[in-house]
Image (cartoon, rainbow, N blue to C red; front, side, top):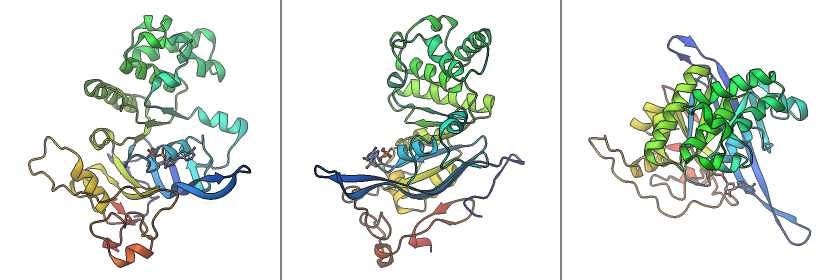
Length: 334
Ligand code: ADP
């Protein structure tokens, strides 16, 4: 099966909502007074994946591996250096201006710290209404009703409308951010470390809310997190990134029960699994993550891989399907 092939869920063809093909994002490194370009930070370096309608795709990997940049590329907050992004069957890679503004209604982002994305001087009612007011999607009274309904839907009381973000706890603020994100009826939500700053019990509440909303609104999520347990809880499929590249992408159950890429194996071996009867042997990775300004030749993971072979130093492995939708970029399985 190809990376782009559509899947079938519960007997219903779900189809592809998002298709990311060979996307790169290089940030220039400059030096001197005239800011001469001396290199590139290869934040995302030839990444391909797809997201089906109604699906949650988790993206995991250590800090700095390019997860957020991938999220921002999907949202078209950043322009890719190379590659293409298709959304709902349309190439959106170079869409700009009013077309991009129109498109933005369909995808929204939720961040780790909702406080920084919620204007503290606006009441919660104004914050949730604002996207609808700006986009002129409904009349004043319709917007008022919808704000009340959205607040109720995310588990906040109607009187939250008159209050301000600082009056709420972190979990409640995330609910406000979710209500605002939902106001324009998006098709896709990119959640970037959306529960990472919350206490574990509150994390579970927000994750359950996101799962309920997915069913109710037919949403699709790209769920970015460094936390493997959180990603396991919410995702249908999971992509593991290393140094700007996709190491492995697979249905959740396959990835967690039978990880194939040595990097996935190492990540999982380091993650505590309270319910696991047989603990995985801990794989200790040597050395630090190399700089994305100077990624290793061949397979980017070869400098830390416990199973490194000669070919890994010179040839970049490509993603190959190993059955059941488990797609791995590793010479071990060539
Ligand atoms: P993650 O979300 O996995 O922690 P990021 O996507 O934030 O990773 O970052 C990937 C790499 O790109 C990091 O080395 C980061 O420092 C770099 N990076 C991200 N944004 C920028 C930027 N605007 N300018 C320069 N480098 C950046």
